[in-house]
Image (cartoon, rainbow, N blue to C red; front, top):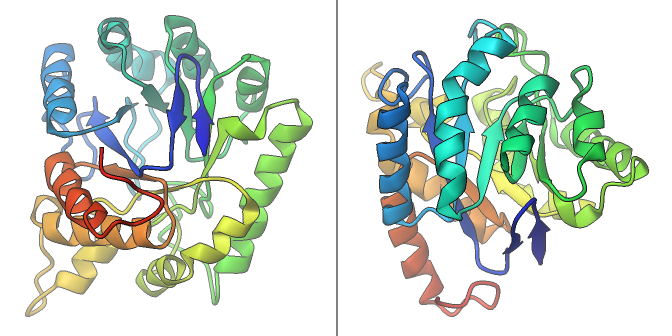
Length: 285
């Protein structure tokens, strides 16, 4: 199982860790902590030391209710970081839905486009389709970041999520994009209730029938906070570390090949213990 990207063919037989680098002042978990180029680079270096296989760089928060950031401001936040990090010889992903940002990042040498809109925004699909090799992660989102939690999905969401992801992958395939370039993300927290998010995790293996590797993004999400709440008090995102690691491990157990996380060292340690069980799809490195 290989994920084809701009510079790397990433082997996914072993589950991979995608470390989160938020170059934003307002992300839900660590906004403002790494929003300068140098702070972001230091954080990214630490994530790699801690065991990240790839880095996911974002210049716009997509937390519920977050404001839209203009493309030029998003790129301003990312540009200096990407020009330096692309020299590190590690896979880099950009978390963006804007075609202009995708194009600029790919021109710099970035390997993967990670799009919460699954390339539905104007020009996005064409940018990826025109690139000869870049990897892409297509995510399911209900509505948009500004309204998704005001009117979340209803009932059993798995059929709708599976149908959407299948359609978006097929649209790319019809544009000539090789299946080996495509990864799917079922979008934890993006317009879904706590119960629906956990239902997707419990039945995650049903999504494997779509034929593409899965990325799971549970790290520090509000659904974990809801489960951890005690006496009416919900822990802050940074206090959801253990729950995030548990969710990542459960996602891998159910077939996810990539986990997108803030807490890289702790997730890497958990996966090392898991691999000691001799899981046939994840031999010890």
